[in-house]
Length: 68
Image (tube, rainbow, N blue to C red):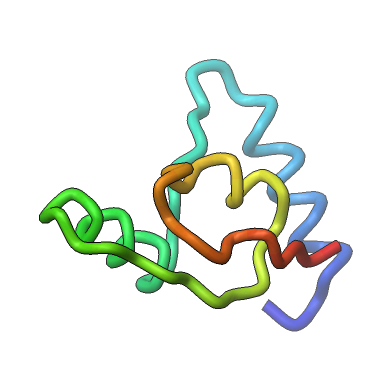
């Protein structure tokens, strides 16, 4: 979505709905969590928000890069 303020407003509204839950989205985070479950050592180089970083396993290396 090219309109950041509209996107932020929509996510605020959606977050306020009772029963709302956050899940990891995007291919890379989902794939690295799955690969880790299979027993591989995982190094992820990515920009991510703090809310995404805390959803990723602490066993994944290299997740210190935070997008503000």
